[in-house]
Length: 192
Image (tube, rainbow, N blue to C red; front, side, top):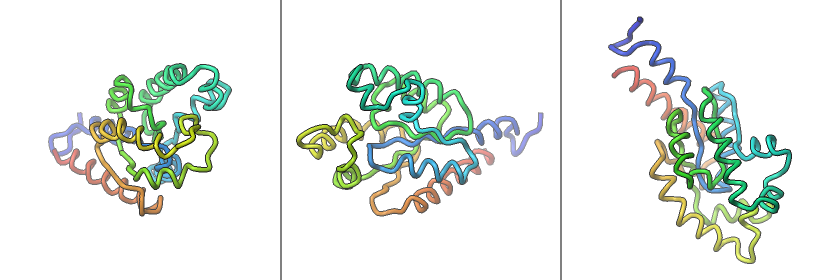
């Protein structure tokens, strides 16, 4: 077996194919950043919500209307389990995907987790006109966003390998920061 500084080349290749998983609240830029990042890394890009829609043949609001959040989360869990088994994929998760401990384990097992953080106020600005977000069908979507953030942010932070704020950065700048960190972590892995 070939070795580089005490590490088998096979191990280095496996680590190089590790997925990159983008987590964070709605409106943080996971899909936009994910597409750019996948192109930069020459990885496949998959948005877990779009994958759910493709498999179900219906959009997320319809799934919520017919099956409720519990039905949607069951579908999401299945998709996350499948996507986590792939290699060389940038996965943009739905904002609530990380609430399920099984999803956390699956994503972490073969993924470098990037928490794209944004303020609740920025989330609100980015999502206020979007009618396709079932959890924001409320008289007071800002309060909903605050409540979701209070529950989910500790989870995002606990599973993240990298935390990046998207509030005042352009998507390409965020991608540059992620790529720089990934390269540094891979070089560190090779040197061990």
